[in-house]
Length: 114
Image (cartoon, rainbow, N blue to C red):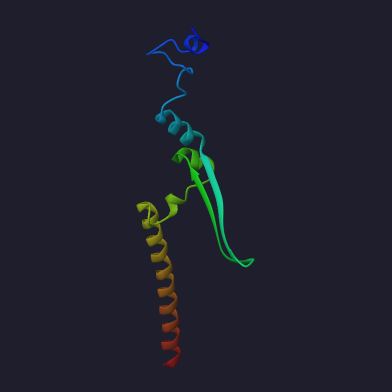
């Protein structure tokens, strides 16, 4: 037998050792720890910069993102119903304040004309 025959015993055995894990294990590890992918795209014409696009991609689970201080999905009204309600409540309060101020100014003006 050759060295190759000794290393690979036949069907059902692994010639290179046990597999490192499934795709699910890899995905779980990435989401648990998080991964950052960054890159820049530049378009120059005759040494004149025409366009620069900076790409930053952070892939992680929600818990990992929160630990990293990222929670924009909770405050974006387009993504969160709670944030949408909060935004409407804030806008409503600002409009009520403006209305009160305008009504007060109208009463002062009407009181001064008489």
